[in-house]
Length: 110
Length: 117
Image (cartoon, rainbow over all chains, first blue to last red; front, side):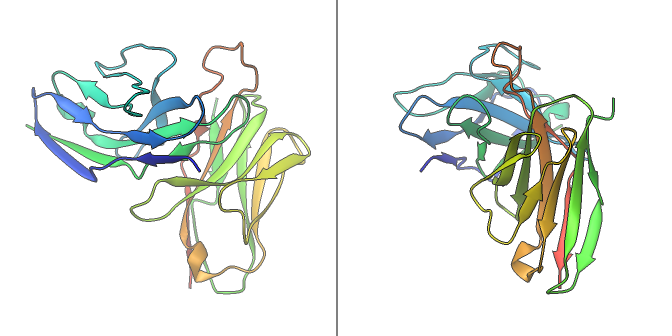
């Protein structure tokens, strides 16, 4: 069975410091990995897809198949980055739903 | 464009009562999903639909039924609510076409907070 693990429930860093939110997965095939974010009083929305290999709001994430990880990184945290972050996996193409991690609450202190 | 909307936003039920949660999307998406989120947990897939008239079970389908009579609507029913179904329910939708940019992106509704006493 597939699983997504986010080991940190809460991560607090100071503004301007680097941020790394960890995500590890278990899946026997070729997964599709995503990061979703939920800002205060907003709905869950896509932040990053591993397939795009792009930077969104200064965040990047690289899929490491050897370590089965998809960590989210940002070199300089900003206060507006404070939110709940969820790592998610989709097992195949088509209609498959997402398997989510439990989420990490990121707090950026001024 | 309202995107994905959910009705109601909040509901309190007594054990054994029934109710239906409505999800509507105006993006002409083929795929729709129902998830539940319990405190300290990630979202878990209940049921999903690949198109009008078709539904399939997800990870935690027991105690729920769904229907997709119209492409834009996806209903989640609880026939006999139990306290274990106290949760926040999220609906999501996405495109079906692999060639469409961001077709793998799911768009979420605001959630329905359900309490079963």
